[in-house]
Image (cartoon, rainbow, N blue to C red):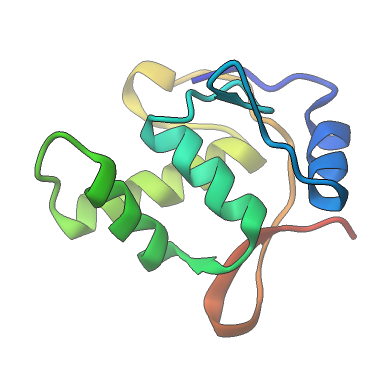
Length: 114
């Protein structure tokens, strides 16, 4: 998982206006596309998935069987990393990306520009 960088907010804003979120198999936030964190980044950028739907996609791409509660926690922890910090294992202590995330209609998670 990457640390937050000063340009994360501007890069995310640019992606929301003109999506091209992947470069060299990584999201614009530095998370590997084929991993859970990259999948979460891309789904939040699209703004049309709930936490539960993101957790289902993580199950689909994962090599191991992860209980639904753990997948939900994984998504919530990554959203926390994107906004304010991170409390997960190897990523503990990583800088937040300082992005704003909102829950829209039908509990869909999206980046918030306002």
